[in-house]
Length: 180
View (cartoon, rainbow, N blue to C red):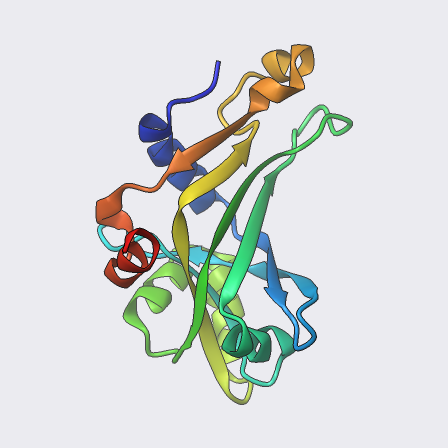
């Protein structure tokens, strides 16, 4: 049984807020994928759903976001006691943009966890430090998060499902772009 799209977003958002590390994939200058591990934070719950990362404008990921703003972001959820089992994951696609370190939602996101605060303090010292903000597409792809491990072991296809981000949590411009 798959989780209903409309009921699963609060669970997925809650789980994403517990984590701080994911894999960002951008398209390089040559149009080929470029992936990198990066710390992230989530925008305030009363705001549009968005993810924030800190980097420098000098790094490839920031330059590539400016060239090709469509990105993918994956957060894995490994099993603590059964490391041989496939990890669960949340994968979202979206549009990324660079924002200054004065972005209030980005600052809020990076104040929520010790490791994020330390990361931002270190990156603030880096020349041309910026936030990368990802505004997700309406559909988020998931596997195994909130699904019984026993169920996934019996039928691996039972672990995969999609979640819809509520329209009122999507950035207005992103809704118009996708829905016309």
